[in-house]
Each structure stands twice: as structure tokens, then as C-alpha cells.
Image (cartoon, rainbow over all chains, first blue to last red; front, side):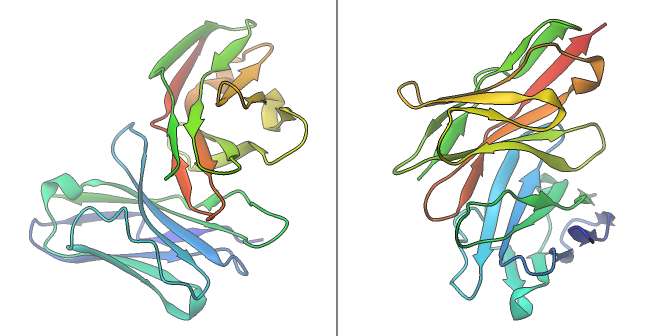
Length: 116
Length: 112
């Protein structure tokens, strides 16, 4: 079946502009995660959605970052007034949830964001 | 909150030799532990997980990992490394709240 998809695959933007990154999770997966990965580095947790529960936003680095998930499916990560330090690969992952669990995450290919 | 430590940024082994990539964790409650691999210019792929039961977990591509509760470790192992195993490896832990945290990653290089 279809995996996690993300769009765009690459995004180059000027400093100060807003960007929107999209994630389409695997159908039926109720859990959705956003991570940020700088070049060759580890994964930095950003935000986590689980069903209709309030999202865990504890990883968002500043108030310029926000995310929403509409209808329990597609998610959009928005970065306002982008800065050069926002340049990274943004990864989305989804997983099933509930029992027996826990379930592994399936990752999308990522969006490479470059802020010039 | 849960956390994971991968003490080695880089591991180098010769092809055919056994490999170990280390991971230690900290979590309240029962730990659920995962290993993922990221090949160059590819997305992260699931390798294996520990939930409960047998401390030795077998996964994809001949990898296995041993859960050690007393040492709070979950080291990834393979008896005989291949050049194609060269990649970035991530350990992750999930606590009961279903939130997942990843380690910083370990770059494995297998030399012919």
C-alpha cells in the first residue's frame, strides 16, 4: 500500500518568508509525528498528534512553528518568518495506535528546506 | 520524560566482523525500544523493536538487539557485518504515553 508522503520534496525560500510543509500519513494511522533532521544529525522531535487528543507540542523550537492535522489525516507544518537556522530536512512519520501496540513508525521521504 | 543515548557518533568495523551499536535509555514505566536505519539519501526504515518477552529480538537484514533491563541498554548487533550495512542507525524509546524519542544516531562504516 501507499506509504507516508510529504510535499514538497524540496523547498528553497528567502529568509523572512512563511512556508507550509505537508504530510499525508498512511491511511488508518492515528498517530502522526513531525521531526527535524539537520545535515547528518539526529532527529529532533517537533510535535505529535494522536487521534483527537490535544497534540504534544513540546518539541516546537519557537512560536514561529505550528502544525495542524485536519480530519485526523493530513498534517501541515507551518514555519513563519523563516530563518537560516530553520534549514533542515523535515520528516513526518505515522503509526498505528492502541492495543496490542506499541507500533513502529513509518517515515516519509522528508522535505528538504533551505532558507537563503 | 523518556530519553535515549547513543554514546558513539561513529562505529567502524571490517566486513565479516561482528558489529555492535550501543544504546542506553531512560524512561518511567515499561520501555518500548526500537532501532531504525537510514541509508544515504533514503528515509528511515524500521529494523526491530522490543516490547516484552524474550530479551533478544531479531529484526531485518540479520540484525538483532538485546534488551538489558539492569543496564538500561538495548544494543544493536550483527554477527557478520556487510559493506552494505554502512548507514546511520537510530535508537528510539517510547513510554506508555506513545510519545517517541530518538537518539542522536550512530554512523556505522563497514570497510571491505
